[in-house]
Image 1 (cartoon, one colour):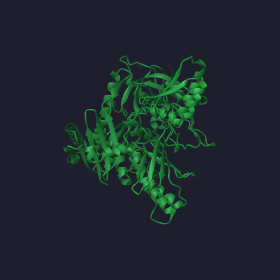
Image 2 (cartoon, rainbow, N blue to C red):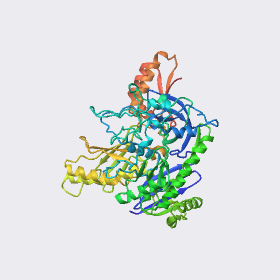
Image 3 (tube, rainbow, N blue to C red):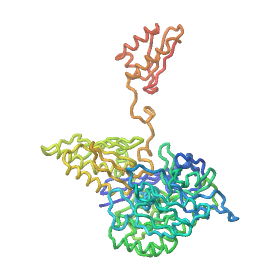
Image 4 (cartoon, helix red, strand yellow):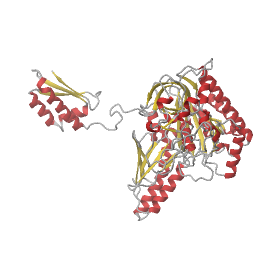
Length: 619
């Protein structure tokens, strides 16, 4: 597959586009006045603790307070004691206690391995290009995630806790089948047992606590209190009226490694399929990290790299974390401690590999920065960075601007004449597939429908990536009678989503012929980024019909009648379309108003008025 990265940079905004086989598949836009905060690390101050939701609001200096779930709060007490220790060696604020577990999920939710939970949350902070790892020998489907981990039980016992927190060191699984005993409390004299094969759904290191009052475990109120200062990282951008979601489990992506300073796991990208290579990479990382107790994930681009490359990356990330810690000690809350690099550097760092034919940049200053950045981690690829010098805008030359305009419309035409309709709502994204103008090349209706669905799959996935749609996505394919045809569609959907860097999961056809996809959403979609709600319909996509407005005028006058004085005339000021209807198609409305009020009625059209707006004035 031929890939190219286009960069268009001005003083106002930077736009990037990824082309696969000369077709636009992903768009990135960052504006100077609204830079991305995902991945930024802040020193925040707790403003409100919500025991009923087992969460807290934290002020990190943004217009809206951020949201911190109890399961997202770090359990590394030593980190926090070190970060917020004052000059006398006393802890400057309330000690964060052992974190509580989120409320129990429904029985229908299967337990998830603790390391999978960790990497899934890391994926919220990391760029979409991070491929999470799977355990050795495990099988995965689209959207599955896991990590090859090296557990160090000696660090898991309650003996590492301060004495006053040891009563909270009780390990209890959620969703455990009846009849199976829960793990027993761990005494300070004994080391904790290694985690079970299926630990709690929301655990990260096999030590996550149940937040149920009856279990006697630590709650959000035990961990945090108003005014407490904590170090957090933005895990999810503010979307709409929702504030950002944060976590205390910081994640720092490098070129070949992802550094997770608050955990101990070592993982390898699931896209590296060779068992021999996976073992080699894991052995290198375990050797290099020694006994630091820090976590690392080998990224896909780390395949076949030698020890020197990983040592350089590991040293850089470790120094970066130490710098963050030192800066956090000096920063007043709320305040920014660490900011992610610019959009161009992030995308180049996370996407640019030997699979890319070229990077084309239309700004000379940005070109120099990209060349310097690429030269740092991959000098051999510098020759693929080119300065675009033509007078025609680069996005017009490669038809990116045209694709962006199409991506803002609900209807997308397929090459065979069919079309798909995409509608975003607050709860989910609905995608409808239709045959449109396509009538098929055979006499079989089933073949025509299957062909349409198969053609739609590629475009549906491309639009999901291009528009950056996330959350729950429901696809309404045209109904197919034969099971083998439904399987063909599912297989192609899995193959196409496999090209997507953002984690996703596919559910099979249900009895209504719908396919559901869950895709990680960490920032606003392209539509929400570039558009605003319609001033006419306030984003609903609908306005009242002209007839409805005419009848509303009639109802309004009816309410006014008892309060009218002895004037001579009523004047109705309204939109021209409504005025035309009152004079022609809805004359009965005018007649009834005159009979009801005993006054003559005139209509004055005002083209500046909203179609739903009108005034009734007595003259």
